[in-house]
Image 1 (cartoon, rainbow, N blue to C red):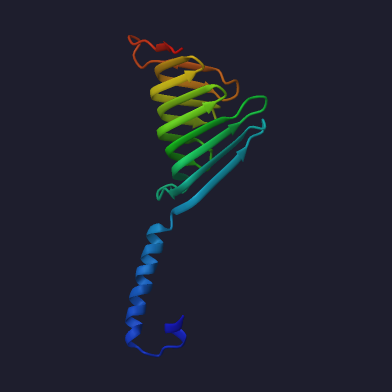
Image 2: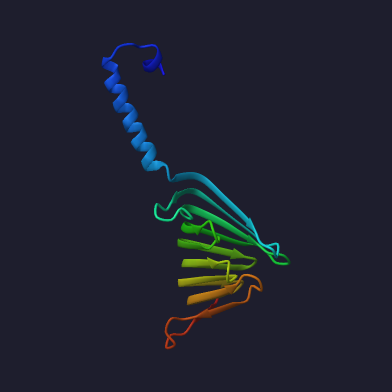
Length: 174
């Protein structure tokens, strides 16, 4: 403002133009970065899905896709306890709310604790798919498996391994 309205020195005009160009380049490269993200949705059954992230970056090719960092999510359904999810990263679709969590995933639901590499929440199917290095803990039991499918409505789950030759490992801890 000073250079534009008060200073008539033309030698500073070049510096001003360079600074404006650099500032606009910085804004253009960071324009798709968002800090402190929070999304909230409610479906016709009364289920509520909220997701919070430290930051997010909008996909240049598809603006409905947002890549999130330091993510926390909560799923609340009627007549059931809340499901809490944490991960380092997630890919969120703002159009259909499907979310792909990855890296350091932790899921808490009542007395159930789950850790895994990947978690896909598919709201159109009311399913959560957890896979790769699943560690499931419940009271005095620990299960090791490759895949876990959870029905988000009934909370019924199904554990499995990639190969039929491999068995799910169950450890009783007391």
